[in-house]
Each structure stands twice: as structure tokens, then as C-alpha cells.
Length: 128
Picture 1: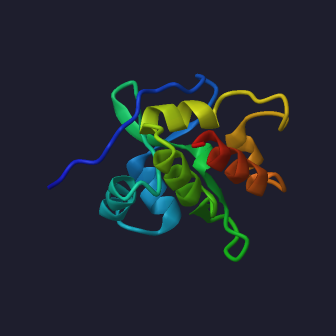
Picture 2: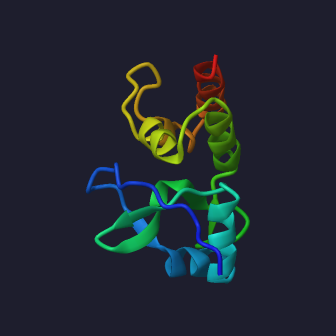
């Protein structure tokens, strides 16, 4: 079995992290699919208190299936843009969770609203 990348836990203690089996259950996929999403850099994981998990803010309510979750639509693209710009996974996670008063708030929060495209635009600009 191949391993998958895990970032340093740079998140605030108040930021919820879901264990991988819980993420798999929420997405209705096997946990091995979540492992593959991590290897493919569609998601980023952190180790918190010895448990590997996905930041809850990387998931959103599925509009078509009440009570179910899905990966944020823009997240895999954002991770790819930051990676192409030279960011490591740890740096990408740190950037997503860092306050930006011009958004306002954090990029990860803005991904849940009308500023998602602006977050992607800013990530693209970081590489130049």
C-alpha cells in the first residue's frame, strides 16, 4: 500500500478536522478513495493528536443530497494552482488558513461563497 501526504497541523484548534473514515462515510466512498484523493492532491490532510484528518472546511453540504457532504468544487484546482506556483502542501494549507483582510477573512472561508473565484485568481498571481 502506498502512502499519502500529510501536512503539519498549522490550523487553529478551533478548526475542525474530520478523521479519514468519517470523510469517506460522508462522501459515500471507501476510505481508500480518500487516500487516493490525497495522493492525487485533490485534498490535503493534517495529523492532529496522532489522527490523520481532513479540515472540515474542505467539505461543503451537497445541494443535491440533503445532509451529505462533497469536496469543495474549487479545492482541487486551488491546490493545483498553489502547487504549480511553487507552494508545498504545508505552505498551501498555511496560505488557505491565513487571515486576509482584503477578502475579508481567510481564503478557505471565501471558497464557500461568492469570492471563490477571487481566491483562485489571487493564488494564480502568487506564482508570478
